[in-house]
Amino acid sequence: MRRRTRAAAAVLAFLAAVRAAAAGDLPPVPAPTSEPLEVQGERWARAVAAELHDPVEHYDPKRIAAEAKAAGGPNDTRALYFDRLAQAIGAAFYSFAPIGAVPDPATRYRLPFELDTPRYLVQGANGPFTHQGVQAFDFAMPVGTPVLAARDGTVGRVRDGFREGGLDPRLRTRVNEVLILHADGTFAQYEHLSPGIPVREGQVVKMGERIASSGMIGYAAGPHLHFSVSRRIAPARAETVPIRFGVGSKVGFVPEPGQFYGGRPNRNVELVVSAGGAPLSEQNPLRLAPGAKTALAVSLVAPGAPPADVTHAAATRFFTPTDWSLVVGADGTVVATPSADFAAAFAKLGAELKPPGSIDWGIVLVSYADGGRNGFASVPVLVRGAAER
Image (cartoon, rainbow, N blue to C red; front, side):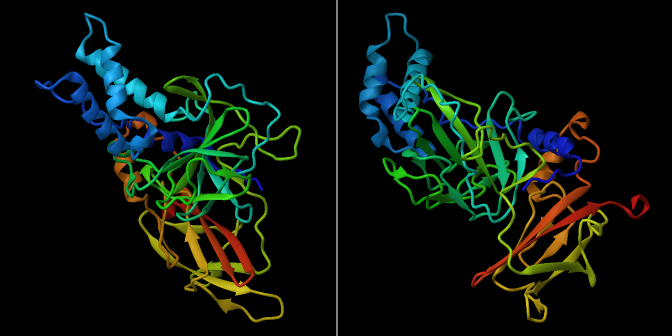
């Protein structure tokens, strides 16, 4: 299922600008002491491992600290030493993948989530800011959504245990992720995952197998899955590569920002979403003034049964992929205002990065799943003052 939404280009510019300037830092290089340089290096390597939740089992801090010292010449500087040490840590992290892999152009990837609910692509390959020159895809989805392997492979790296998310630059390196190595030497990267990742390094996984749950851990403005495929081009460097989705298709497709993906929902019941007693639809969107709020009501309509109010049922979930304009509560209350992270970041943007029309619309997704009964509804929202309606 693909559906183009209004003002997608403007929104992408806004979203990317919000995220553009982040710069996460590793633990600072220690100040000089009277200790041998390799002792200071070993301590720093352990601090880096702790900061990145990268187990020291991937490398021996004492050994690489000594090797970095032995590799220096008579005119070696402290800065060069720690640079070599950082390169050694990076090389150890990517050591599960071969250098110089050649991607198979015939490979088609499956979407990395269940196909029962459409997912909105917030930013795609070569996005205008944070994805410039990067082949990556950001799919908006609620925290806890199953993340599935997009291709067969072997788990190469798992970083887990981070619990914070938001637009604080210090969170840029603090992200839960899974890296899965493929038969052609490339590897997929699944980021911003919820803690408690079930797969382990060295585990063989099949396409479509659940490998994690989505989240908004790390530098993220809202709940989403960041997905990309890379190849290792140097011991401590990797680059993303173009891919196409569509298993079984010779042509395949590249997801475009501002559209929904995931096939048609598996619906056997109808959800009627209303506000103030009036049913909402594409033809009759929810209209809210900036800052206003309203409570949605959800009725389940099943064949041979009277409508049932399921607004507050445990099986009913509300979500918005448009955090730049809306906040949606678990009870279905919609507030026409950006989320706190977006509002704070938007206030810091220059006028040239605030495209008109980027925050005057939104979407609320409503899903219902209980005992084999499944429903889904998409509610368009217009955020405008009375004079603009």
